[in-house]
Length: 475
Image 1 (cartoon, rainbow, N blue to C red):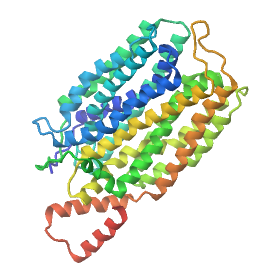
Image 2 (spheres, rainbow, N blue to C red; image 1 turned 180 degrees about the vertical axis):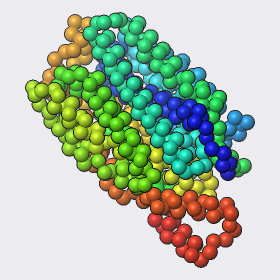
Image 3 (tube, rainbow, N blue to C red; image 1 turned 180 degrees about the horizontal axis):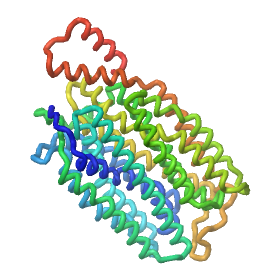
């Protein structure tokens, strides 16, 4: 393996790329369902189903993209060509996805257009996200440097999440208040954010390096290749934790606008700003802990606080002062911060464990499963909300009544879909994290045996016994 270290410029450019990973997902999670229901005018259940359909394609494209990027051999590396190309294409995808087609007379035409454009966006997102997350485990071979780069990446992702949650929410609030028309909304969201996401991806393609030696043997395009990473017990545990965390976050993001506008009559921007602001404040603390405290403990330690806080949000009486709901949101964010940040910090360690077990490093396949989980979680969250809104009697806004008074059933549906789902998922996440097998000590052992594999043909008796115990624990 190469040992050349990263320069600050390269670290910043690589981390900046997660503007797309964090920002685009946040924007879609918080805005796309309400865009389809309140601006385009689709039935909530149909809108959610239109989004879910694209995830059937994701079920194929994410793992497939992992194999494709693993097997790519160019002078620019395996991952960067896709990130560069995807960065250009995301401009077109975003421009199509947010087209203001609310004036179309055909409901079928709207649905077909929404499905087609979201499928196109999902494909471009896969082309970008799988190689980028793979590169996070390959951009450096130094463990501490890798931790530092991935923490920096998550700082950027969280800042992007803040920007791409708060700014679109403010744009939506201003649009609903009549401050500007749909043309300005489209220019800001469809064009402006497309360019915002594209620039760092293009720069990654031009100015970063891939430092892990590319194996000469290529992967075979078979189903067993796609699911091979799931043979690794440590990686399975990580996927359970990541699934619980990501669906919880997407449910919160999708639901908080409806909750704020219709249930407690507060500001979605303040709710989301409070949540994300607490996350940012927690970064320096978590950055200090990540190299000294077991990462799984950072994940689960605050979850009981998050669960209690969000139960309070879900039950908060609509006639009480709104500041109490904001305060409970802050408590939730404080407890949730560790779970929100840890999954991708643990990811390179899980890839190391996979390399030790599988005797190869198919990082793209690992990444494909993780990105599939991330995008599927958003669809599940939106589907939960769409169906709940439809069956509980949600009233779509009209030109005469942009914020209609919702029936009691719809208000209860919003509360249940948001808070009950979050609490159940985070409870499962807590249990999974407590059982997670890849401690910091075992990660250190994994890396030790990977180095021994490179330098020794045969292990000593003591080393072999240590390896056997390690394999039994994490495989």
